[in-house]
Image (cartoon, rainbow, N blue to C red; front, side, top):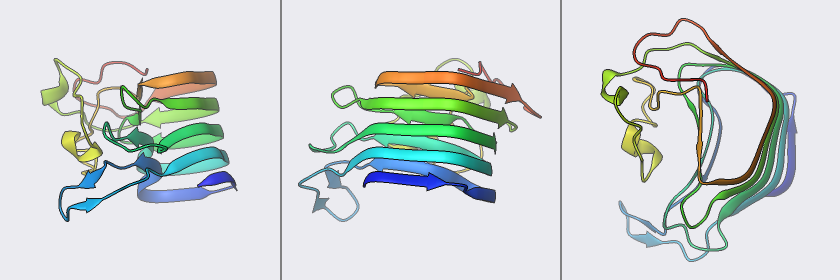
Length: 171
């Protein structure tokens, strides 16, 4: 996926708003080998309103084959209400690059499971930390990023709604 703009989207009562993934090299359930990882580049999401369990996530599998990656993605004028953390994770060898978040309004309302009170899980896939299951929320932050190179955040506001459990911080 390259050079696309999505503008003026409205999502209500959905499980997932926007999710970009670069999968692992071999799918363990059917043993299909991926020879060339998908490249997600030069995408722009603008003027998006969401009421979702998960507003957005981006994830690159640690063993995603080249040229797979997520590069040059912009989220601008985003207003989201979410029950779970927004999750951005490249891999140690293949970081997400040139991600820009501008004019982000994120309202977090949901319950956090006690098992994440003492640590932050390091999933090898989104399902390793209940990310494909909407309850309980997976990470104890409003917005969580790791393995991202040139991440820009400008004019972002993260608010707490009706939350319970051991949430840690907004970022």
